[in-house]
Image 1 (cartoon, one colour):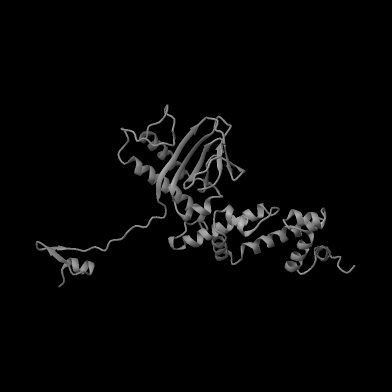
Image 2: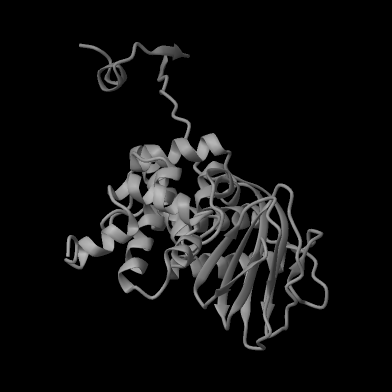
Length: 316
């Protein structure tokens, strides 16, 4: 009969002093998110904060509002963050974070690392789970005990480790932040109330990006939308965004822009409150002639003919 270790592991053991040596098959654990460095960390309580614009060349910035309301400016656009909400700001983005409310409490941390998985979240406001808020609270406490602060206020842009830093504190800080980000990714990719499996994560992130791009298109129809401008907003190259979007939807970004413009134009046409020229401008076409041309291509008739057909007056 084969030795016990050979029967269990299917291996032919070597011996060391007559004792069998089992050679285990090692498994390297994968890492979805790896925080490399902290750039800044601020815990703000009851203070006015001026939204001074700045940019981190290679660092992400995560903002979580705990009480009151935060004003986040990104690329000259303003967004209000309510209690329990998280905003993530992409490296290289001009931004500012402010509040004029004394009751505002917020935690803002900048860090390097994260990878491409975070890029689809950069234009999102996501509600934090109770578990995430607890992780941020633990991270704040570790930061307070780990680094020298000015007047006991946690506003760190230069990290001077404290002599009384608890054992393993810096690793705990990193771990809490990574866990919070993974929970954020799980939430936005959740399908029918269930956490997406690792094997489906790539598809789930593509679908989430496609939803974000589609929402952006709907909210900016009157502007000069191009594939390049949309890709720039999401910090992707034109070709990369086009590839990811088509993989998720089967459509090109430009196709969706035209389709959504025509859909919006149909609604405005049936309201009969504006001229074709006004409608063309409102939905982002460069001229009434070009609008009519694209409308004919998409719908199969002119805008005026469409209104007549829908209202049952064609041929009268």
